Length: 319
Image 1 (tube, one colour):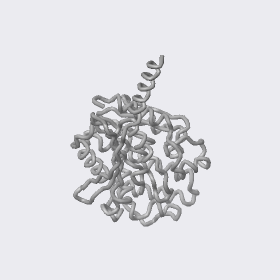
Image 2: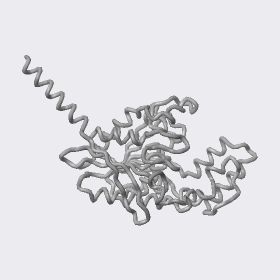
Image 3: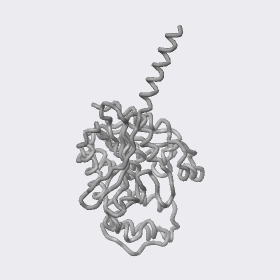
Image 4: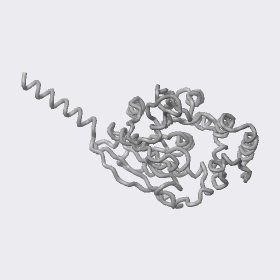
């Protein structure tokens, strides 16, 4: 009886060791020829090269960990990388061109564009695919990063794409809806006219006071490039497996956006997570009750998020 107990204990200990691999954490850089981009690598130590996830952050000056100067420290993308590492999945997350440690690669935001971000993701991908330490490459994009992942995936040679809270509509349509909900009628016409000009590829100095930070002249060239993109059409073109994950309590991106992506690519997997918000955490539905999830880096990610991502990645060929 005792020998059986010892054998069972050893078996359980072995299982635990497999579930929590030793993970090395180190900096990783990409010299694009037009500036150096800086990132973080989490690499589980194992005999077989693990799949590697390239994590692409959302809009604005959001850094590799998911943090933004406007909202402070959130660490949701850092937590995502740690979760993947504990499931034997390597990851690289990076500061976008012009952001945090990669700020010198684009000191003037007027030089930024969607295509430049896409080219950077392709360059990161080619570097990772050439590295014998890694297995299949998966692009994971959060929010606006989901669009960048979709646009880059085929050129990057990705084995799969995962979108997290990705829009299924052109961003100009989303902004029009938000302006209609939040701006007084007296200013709405000017806001709509501004969007019209940007969609036509024209910058403008006629920006209503409430919109001057979001639509400042220096960011308008980037917005022009963004408004040219249709996330659903980009997603439809993906030839590789794809997973769409959307939280039902996301007040920034709607479930209908995820359903649009699914309709555009019917063979993609769609996961709707009850209670999950835009920060990938379980939170109440109303925005005023979600404040803590946008400010507290200690809050865990939604458990189902990790489970679904890990299952999808491990089911990929050669993963």
